[in-house]
Length: 329
Image 1 (tube, rainbow, N blue to C red):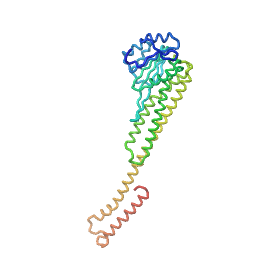
Image 2: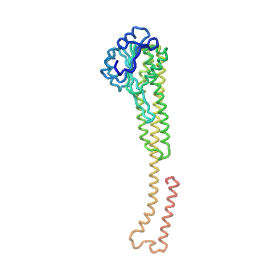
Image 3: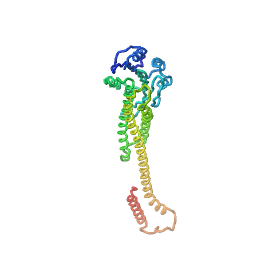
Image 4: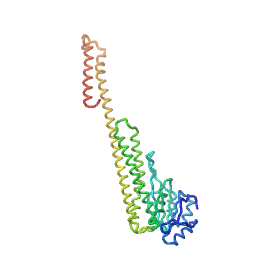
């Protein structure tokens, strides 16, 4: 088997069993035996490597193209021989407070599940381990795998939304902190908004596929699984509501930050204007008496010089007191 295969197993009656190493023989065995299916997981296959899988499972060429190119929106497409679904798991970096999205594709058909993932993080390993310890779930066949993967991805959305909420509260506290306690706040807000937008690209488009899965008439999906997909859809709605709430709060935080910057700039301008006025008064008086005129008042008065100094001091004191009372200084 190609090296891109992460895991391949036959499941009969809810239990993992040894099967043929050849994919054709394994799929034939799964279709011959009742309540048996093949689950094949691959990691970032090339076009040449995927040709074998496409031939064995009879995959549609358009779905194969999407699975190889990646960079797809979450979606659900129905073809003659299989069901094709795209999910975007999210990865939250606690150290950098950043979100990255990966891609996970599922082909569900007659007695088989083929999962194709792009990225180093994936819930598939834990999903497979958990399902192998729950025989009753595995007995439901490929539909159970589709549900379990969707449920794991969506539940992680809720966890990431909670982490982002904590980061947003820290950012909000930084915005309303005293002036000078933080730098680059605006850049952090815009960077946070980009993370939320990336998160929304993963959660938002998934609502329509989940609505279809909880409805009737989707091939390769058991009717009895509709309540389970409805539960996943409810969790997805919670995640989408959280993302919308984060986006609105970010807009409010940004508006508050810009308003605070405007207020602080106005305060700075008032202080500058006040000090400029205090400096202008003695400058004006001194400038008048510095003019070279022969006949000017008080030039021959003995107390003219100290009187002018006293006038300057009184005017400065009155201006300073007035500005201080108004909060400009």
